[in-house]
Picture 1 (cartoon, rainbow, N blue to C red):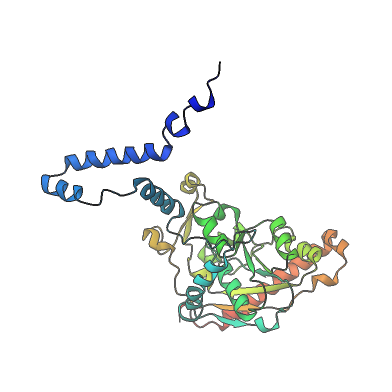
Picture 2: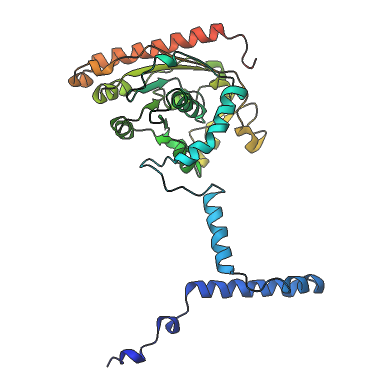
Length: 331
């Protein structure tokens, strides 16, 4: 037979709240630590404010560790995770890298349309997406009235701990066709690197030699979305982390395609992630008006293959021009 409601134990009487249990456990731990301290130290610690909310302190510490020191989100985050406040806070650093550290020289950006989305296609420059960040910053600075371009990031990189939320807040998006289609369809320009992992894994002696573009995806994507394709040549970014050679067997244990050995990594540990101050030049080429093609052209494999190779050759030619004009890597 059930008891009358007035005889039912209240929730607080039936079992203690988790917060109370945790607070009491932390209090017991504190008392145990104080008991092991020398007399003077124990007395000073006991004289501290006894009203400390240990549960709140623990919860705050847990939150800080989970966020790895990242600032609080603003709540104004789009569907891909970009945080406008985080971007604004990063702009002074990006501008310093552009003007002082890498001394980026830009050519041809004034010819890029600012009235609609554009698919930028560039050579890949190393494992870390400094090139994507900088290209997005350059276009956004030249066309502040438009939506900030998003740069595509390789699968293996965006799955590393702490990397995905950091890059997403600054405009990085996992590289896949579906994401690129949604971005272009919503009016955002996209920075793509069709060399893929082959381009990121080039050793120093193979720098600025474009690898084969993957299956013509960028051209068919542009035709279906009706947006222009703008080829981009980036010189200087492949020297920020020059790969001397690769360790593949060791890297498999970390879930990486390979472990790069550079002049600063792994010898300098985490400091090896600091990019070298190479001098950059970025050249934007003549756009391909993919919107001029019929929508069915996206399924014409011969046409897609020919256009893809033309874009690749255009980027390679621009790279060769910039390399011949460069007097020094760092000067």
